[in-house]
Image 1: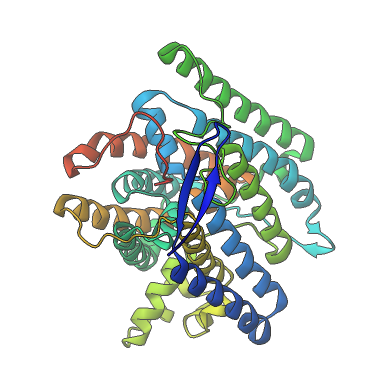
Image 2: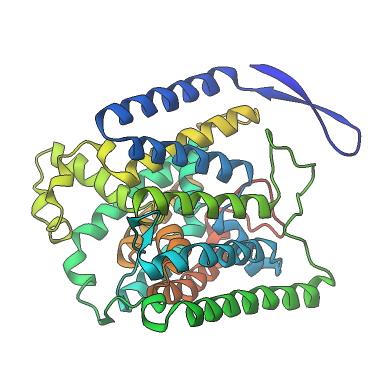
Length: 407
């Protein structure tokens, strides 16, 4: 482990211990993976691998998770995290909607995540919301926390994958629940009305958090607020607004390269299904995989979401090591372990039923103009509220102010 000196605006000097071996190994894997994917798949796929790594670095350094932001607002009325999300969404629709409206970006076809809006979305998002609080993270939070060395989140991730496979297996049931066909406000309303309506809703939500926070605390926390220490590009934490803008730009880059926005959880169902296939289970015959049975036997390097997910974990490992915070703890309290297992299962099943997670259904779903995203948000928020209430039964804290973690 090596160290460097980090000065903050108040004149003090803080010694930062860099985890040398993990950062070197992660960097080597990222570089060699880039070359391998370029040679065996394509330049675009290699670029998406690197974007995944940049997403992991951003998520870790900005501590930009959705779970904690919602928990702090529910528990204590602090809304900086929610306002950062609204700023991210506002910039996102301004970037995404014009190109989704015309159907091309840089002369390449692009499409959003537009899914059926119905009972399965409401039920799945509610389940997912509970899982966020018990598992300790959302989809993106689980990946970057696990990549950063949080051993509890590896448990959540494993059972997230198990839950995703269960969700894929019961696809015939939940896909038959009442729903309306995929509905895009961009396509149905036109560009200008869709932009105006979305920006108005984001503004209303942000305004509501300001009113509630002032009423409860007499002042608001700015989204550039960094708790306890000064911000550092190479150490963190970044101001929330930095993370929000970096994420939306990287999501836009994903749209340009992949022809669709950033997603996470479809890969979990694939990983688990490929694992079952390796043990002789005929998962390719499941209704969930009927349209794409070849992915069960294709290498993961061909799957955009898998490539980006693994990149996120490696990027988070680089960030955690650069910040000197890669210190896995292998002993977990029993109740916390049980919460991680249950939370992971709920996350996996919920994400499949809701046609996505906080990234695919919420972030990218809203940027896609999909109606199902607007069903996802209140249902997931309600699930989070219940999850916050039951966290103490599993020995999990309900913090009143943001801490330096996105989980």
